Image 1 (cartoon, rainbow over the protein chains, first blue to last red):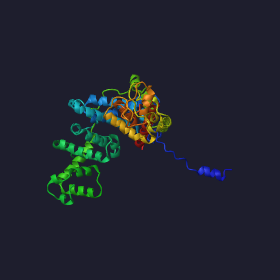
Image 2: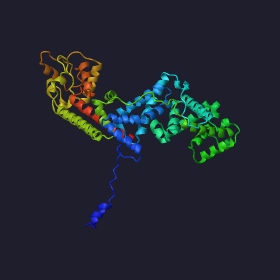
Image 3: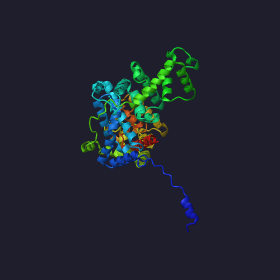
Image 4: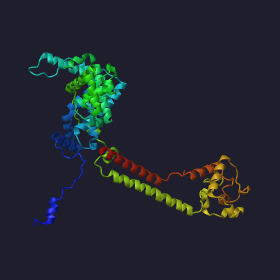
Length: 219
Length: 271
């Protein structure tokens, strides 16, 4: 019976290829798998599952947004609004990376805030005047090196705050967050060429702003 | 973008910094890349610019955010969740517009089809029934008591009573389009009083339907007042008041098409 031709055909038949675009497609990455499980549970009405996602990503999102929106309170409001928006639109999640989805929502919130800020400008980065924060240093860190690193970070953050919002967003997403051009184009809703142009012009603008402090970055 | 001959130019101002920036980002290929490399090799300032841009990219990537401490916890409270959860019609719209919704497209097609069929069937049956019937008293009398008669909406209805009363022959009966043209002309030059097509006055002692009858088939009769002609013109232009069923079917078409457009947009986004 096991040699029956029908059985052989049945065994040899390829599995049905079903294109499944739903978010329940299980990815290989354990972090993505965790995110999708949390998101699916949150979709079913579990607030704790959504708050677990918030706990996972609130630091990342705040670190991203605070580079784009140079005001602590506004950045904080942006992140909160992004999580509100994500909760409101749980049903609209199209699959893929939850992290990218949250970043996209947060970037949109930040861009809205930046547009509003142009109408009501505020003092950028008031916290930069606060000298209390220092980057974590190793046990055997050279004080000169630490001071130089601090000064370099301070200079680059100040310069970043002075370039245009679009250029800053593109540079942060590319250099800091590590997204590729296509992902940034998708997130910001512009063409790939525009993303490249923004990054190139933004870097040239940074160099222009830091012209008299470039020694900090050379060598 | 400079030509290759420009590479050896002495002035750095003539060189394209965007080309150098693109080279630093690794975005160039083939000829452009060769040209940019030649530029950085021949121009010291371009070479410095290239190195600076690379250094800035590294510094940006390693720089911590300007504010490292999150000012508050962003978790949602049950009150937030209750406020943010869509309710009522927003929930319905959200469910229909969800990517996993399988009902929006069939529902859209169904509603649009139902609306179209309803409109067609309703209006065809209305047209055929009105075409087969004689003009109503309301149409013939202009729609209001005491008003002069208006030409009928359907001049080919075959009503001969008016002709018999006024003594005219059937070949004098004008076409329907003439009737409407005359009515429009009458609206521009209003005529007061009731006259038949020969200009004779209608006895006021006649019953209302008989008084109205002679004017019905004859459109070039100067009977209709401006009000009646305007009424007729509005009927001719499709200005008939919307019936509830028409509105219902129209709404079904609009909602159905809206659902189809929404599902099409969603499929484009997903693709």
